[in-house]
Amino acid sequence: MGWAIAVHGGAGDIPRNLPTNRRQPREAALRRCLDLGVSSIRSGRSPLDVVELVVRELENDPHFNAGRGSVLTTEGTVEMEACIMDGTTMRCGAVSGLTTVVNAISLARLVMEKTPHIYLAFEGAEAFATEQGVERVEPSHFITPENVERLKQAREANWVQIDYTQPTHENGPLEKAIDEGDSQIGTVGCVAVDGHGNLATATSTGGLVNKMVGRIGDTPVIGAGTYANSLCAVSATGKGESIIRETVARDVAALMEYKGLSLKEAAAYVIDRVPKGNAGLIAVSATGEVTMPFNTTGMFRACATEDGYSEIGIWDAEGNVEN
Image 1 (cartoon, rainbow, N blue to C red):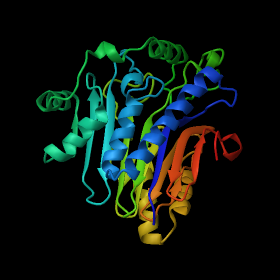
Image 2 (cartoon, rainbow, N blue to C red):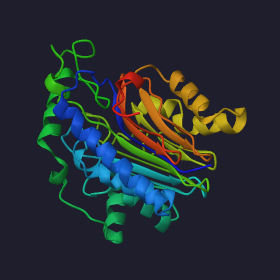
Image 3 (cartoon, rainbow, N blue to C red):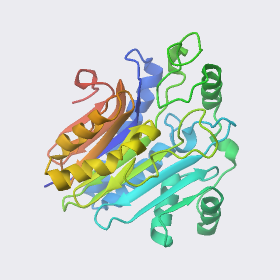
Image 4 (tube, helix red, strand yellow):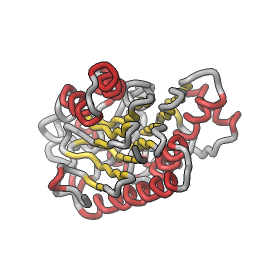
């Protein structure tokens, strides 16, 4: 048994010719956040603290679809959502429909710790944020020029866009793929286990480009995009509707609990069952195993374990940055 941590920055149809200026900032952010998580675990911080800390960092990075980089709804607005769960106690908190909260993941933790509830959304969540004194800004803070352009492209294609997957003539009326990866952006998540087998998970997202106002995805749904118990911690990414239908995160834990599968076997089985091109996940077990399967073209991901293994990757093993 030993500590382990994994981080993701979204999954989707990530082209292998993704321009360097689009790829490197995300790789650098994953490396920075992985190092932050490892340092925090080594210093004795709880897995719950670690996953919140790492996801906050990713929310503050405009290169990912969470927090500052959240994509836009059909109305050109931001509706952020997040979820956090402690595997030891199975306490959890979730939020949706945030428009002004800088770090949705921290508000989700406050829902878990300061209310009798699990899930708050929209006006109620914003009011709770005010009550708790969390950092808030004007909604315009989250409206980046890049995401305005992404929405424009998705509207032209009549396309609701999964992380990193570009509108093309094959999935909408747009005549050509978006140049230079302008539509490339992804959800974030972190899972961690300490040397005592305590587990935690956190996931945060802005949802889908061009999503309907009021749409809620898999991220804040316990057992779909986010789940942790005494066996494992899971954070999923991809098309929320598919992940919800397949109860992806909970099924990984259920296969371990009821079928006796290993973490890698359970995660691989669940991802294989989701329609191809729709999902990926990161997961750690109580014994320090880690796995990061996906059925999309790629998934921005990173992991490290106490025995010295580390990886930062985007595509399959051959495309990994570091191994």
